[in-house]
Each structure stands twice: as C-alpha cells, then as structure tokens.
Amino acid sequence: MLDEKLQPIFDDVLRRNPGELEFHQAVREVLDSLGAVVAKHPHYAENALIERICEPERQIIFRVPWIDDAGKVQINRGFRVQFNSALGPFKGGLRFHPSVLVGTIKFLGFEQTFKNALTGMPIGGGKGGSDFDPKGRSEAEVMRFCQSFMTELARHLGEYTDVPAGDIGVGQREIGYMFGQYKRMTNRYESGVLTGKGLTWGGSRVRTEATGYGAVYFVQRMLQRRGEDFAGRKVVVSGAGNVAIYTIEKAQELGGKVIACSDSNGYVMDESGIDLALLREIKERKRGRVSDYAKARGKSATYVEGGSVWDVPTDIAMPSATQNELNGEDARKLVKNGVRAVGEGANMPCLPEAVRVFADAKVLFGPGKATNAGGVATSALEMQQNASRDSWTFEETEERLATIMHGIHDRCAQTAEEYGEPGNYVLGANIAGFIRVAEAMRALGVV
Ligand code: NDP
Image (cartoon, rainbow, N blue to C red; front, top):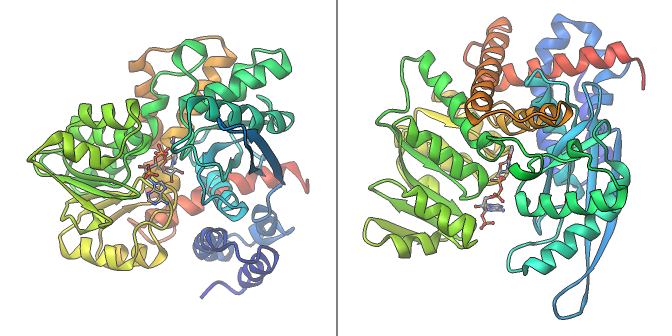
C-alpha cells in the first residue's frame, strides 16, 4: 500500500500515461520508498514537488526518415525525454532497439534522474532513442540513420542543455556518426555535447568500461560489508553487450569465476570460465552471437537456445541485458541455488516480485540506479575533461570511478540505516537520489 499522500500522485501518473507499464513500474518503486520521507519531512510533499518530479520537463517525438541500401525509404520514430534539469543539463543515453516506445524512454529518463543525483555530480536526467534496429544493417545504413536522427535532435542539445550518450544498440560507432553530423550542422567542435566518444576525438578513458566496472565495484563493496569478496565466487552475467563484457572483465580481475552470459537468443555456460578475449572478438569486432562463442570455444562451453541464464547456479548474479529480464520464478531459483548477491548492471532488470524474493531471502541486492551509475558518472568525467580540454590517464580516471562508486554505495547504505532499514539499498538509493533532486527543485522555485 502506498502512503495516503502518495496514492493520488500515483493514480494521476497512471491516468496521464496510459499503457506505459514500465514507467508506472519505475514510478511505483520510487513512491514506495518515499512514504517514510514525507512522514519525516512533510515539506517534500508540498508545492506539488513529487508530482513535478514525475512529470518530464519536455518530451520530444520525431520522424526519422532514411534510405536503406536497396534505395527504399525507411521511417523510424525518434524520442528524447528531457526529464529533470534541476541539477544540471539533461544527461542520459540513447537506445536503438525495435522495442522502444515513449514509455520505455520515460521510465529510463525517470530512473536516470535519481541515478545522476546519486553520483553527486552536476547532471540532470534524460533519455532518448529510437525503434531503429541496428542488427543486420550495413555500416552505411547505420550512418545514414544516425545522421537523420541527429538532424532533428541537434536543435534540442548542447553542452549546457542536454548531453546524450550510448545505451542498448548505441556504442562508439553510433556516437561517432551522430557527433559528426552535429559538428557539421553547427560548425562547432562542441565535444561536451555527447559522451561515449572515441579516445582520439574527445572521449574519456574508462568510459567504455565504466558501467560494468562500476557495477562490480558496487557489489564488491556490498560483499565487503559481510566480510566477503569476489575471489573464488561463481558469477553469472546476463547480456553480452557493453555492460556485460566489462562486468565480466572486472569480476574476473577480482578473482571471480564468470561461468555464463547470454543474448536475446539464448545463453552460454562455460564451466572453465568465460574466455573474455574470445567473447570480445565475437561481440565487439564481428558483431556475432553468444552461440558463435560456444562454437568457437569448443568442449567447455554449452549453448542453450532460448534458455534462461538464471537456471545456472551461481553465487553472484549480475543482470546486465535489459529491463524485466529476471522474474519472481528466476529469483526463487537463484535463491534455491544459493545466490549471495545480485547487482543490477541493466536498468530495472528485476521485476518487483524478484526484488521482494531477494529481500525476503536476505540476498544482497544492488538496484540499477545505484549499481550501474558508473557509466553516467564517467560520462560526467568526460564532460569535465572536454570543458578543461584535458585528458586523464586510465589509472586516474578509474580511481575516480572507484571513489564515486564507493561513495554511492555508502550514501545508499547510510540512508537506508537512517530510515531504519539497514541493508535495503533500494530504499537507500531512492531516498538519497530523491532528496538531492528535491532540494535543488525547492531552491529553484516552481519552474
Ligand atoms: P548493448 O546493446 O551493448 O547490449 C545489450 C545486451 O543485452 C545484448 O547482449 C543484447 O542481446 C541483450 N538484450 C537487449 N535487449 C534484450 C531483450 N529485449 N531481451 C534479451 N536480451 C536483450 O547495451 P548495454 O550493455 O549498453 O546496456 C545493457 C543495459 O545496461 C541496459 O539496460 C542499459 O540501459 C543499461 N545501462 C547501460 C549503460 C552504458 O553505459 N552502456 C549505463 C547504465 C545502464 P542481443 O544482442 O541479442 O540484442
């Protein structure tokens, strides 16, 4: 049950955003945590502050026409939801995936607002993307699509206004094409307008690795509080994209044994540990599938078409593919198989029922808006380097990332304790993120 002050706010969100189930889910989770806050500090429920936090500042939907290699005109839909700029320019990635709808982007922008607040850095929240599917498209088609997408989006961006980055389906290649088009249209080398750039053209070291590395740092800190660590532990990671690959790399570096990963077709189990060099060759260079990894790896690997990676018994689970990919049943299976910690590398990968199952079983649980904040934090470091026309070493940048992640962890842990629920990182993240945004919004007045 929601607090009586919060229920009408949620009812209004349902009414005003019909059919946007992921957005409802994300708002509900935050409101569930805020009952204790408005009881302790009633001023946060005044001046429609929470209603304003649930309403994006601006939502842009646009047509993206482009011509495929066969000369046929294709139409996609582009989105940018500029959710909240109380703490800084809108900041958040672009997702290219056929499943993208405005509700998807809205949920991601809402989450992003609190995530960015948790980093302690001067960045607001936003998200964007398109229902374009880069899979199976030629280089030339991807470039033409990115150029058309940016032709419309450019007017809404700027280093002080809105700074997108990558997400599912958008890596350095796509960022490059979009940055090139923005530069051409504006006749400005405005490095700070996009993050996730290549190292030779304004990118930051560690940005590629940051989300995965950061997620592992967060889980490591949770484990340390129980006197445990990654060494000798079995780890299962879902996905095989940017977040998954660098989660695997850091978990292995800390002595974890990563035995499975997946993509949307199935999963691969590798009892002798995932061979990361091979996986990267297949995913990053050849843009192949995890089934190709299993074939190339030979005997130690088994590929299960259409199976759930959560069937694999593990000590640590890192869902790093997409939203709602781990349900209550998966969570019960993981608990039965002895899972000790779960760190969300993806945004909202665990359904609410799964989160409850982990909480009941006292499994350490790091929610995405805290655990995967390393990506956006390093994007903010990229913006800092762009603004000062500087470039830091890998070691210096990674050290900053580690410090930021430990800070986020500790802020969530302390807040949960303050509100009488030690170890509840979901509550800690939601409240700590909310308070930082709410304080800035109060200071800026009704705008
Ligand atoms: P990528 O596109 O690099 O990889 C996504 C991976 O997840 C792929 O293996 C993909 O498989 C799989 N996947 C995507 N959609 C689905 C689906 N509907 N069902 C099953 N599997 C799916 O994306 P990222 O690694 O960048 O992003 C992964 C998650 O992490 C997302 O939730 C994203 O929002 C979040 N995130 C990313 C950040 C970043 O810095 N990149 C920062 C913070 C959060 P397939 O190839 O078969 O589609």
